[in-house]
Structure formats: C-alpha cells, structure tokens
Length: 110
Image (cartoon, helix red, strand yellow):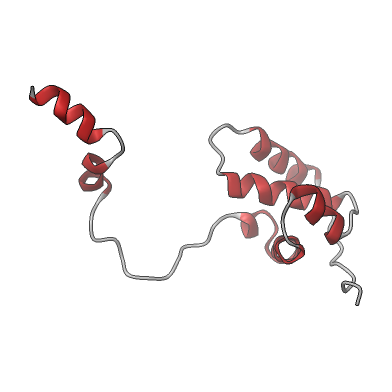
C-alpha cells in the first residue's frame, strides 16, 4: 500500500536560511541538525520514502518532522519541555559528577 500523499512543504527565504544555519552551527544538537536536513529535503519535493532512505531514518520519522514543521514552522523543530518530576539538583550540584572529575580529584589528592 503506497504512503499517503505527503503534506506540501514550502519554505520562506528566512526559514531556509535558519535551517541551513543550524546545519553549519557547531554547537547545534544532532537531533536539530537531522530535523533540519529532513525539512530541507522535503522542501525540495522529495517523497518521504526517499528522504528516509537518504538520511537513514524511518519514514515515520520523516512524516513526524514534516507535519510538525507544517503545523508549527521552525518552532516545531525545537525540543519541547518534557513531562516528569522537576530536577532535584542544580547544575552546580551536578558539576562534580562530570566525566573526568574523579581522575582530577585523585591527582590533586596525592
């Protein structure tokens, strides 16, 4: 059974510029970069199956980010706050448990 017709996706010049900027940004999360690649490929008119194969993701992933972008534009690609219990420790309290902390502590304790 063929995939349903994908939602049409057209980008403004500003949106295209922002998405390409996210691809080049060194500090952008890999998830945001992948979402940007998906949207840019969909905007070129490629079918979801082709985008999924080219990027090594599932068709459902492509469908999800295409529809989120159509519904919410750029804001739809950014991670939403997650539900769950609030944090119990602050960033300052978590810092001593960062990788390499115990090795630095052992060297200075000698």
